[in-house]
Image (cartoon, rainbow, N blue to C red; front, side, top):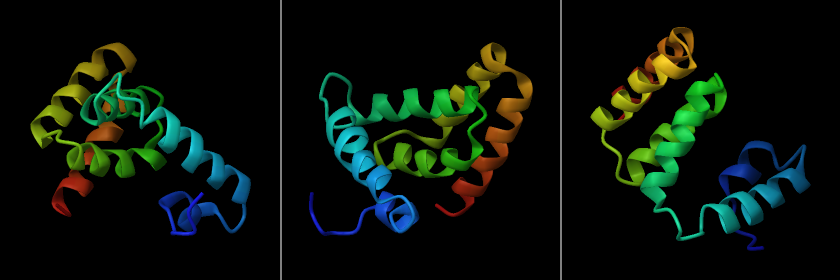
Length: 106
């Protein structure tokens, strides 16, 4: 593993270095690097899951990553709207507010 700081190490590496290491190596190293799905598709799947599971804390990061991976704001809003009918209205309403905050910063 490189000594270069990563989001995981910057965010929680001081208190949970092993979790930061496996986040870097497994999640972003193995899973996200697998070319079976494009980074854009992985972002769409991740955003949809985070909305459905009401994971507000992680959603902002992944909305930004999704846009870096080629998702448009319209596509993200469409995914959140679609998810509302399968995962519930409150989860979508919370996600829309997170998206609003992320979008105004971009």
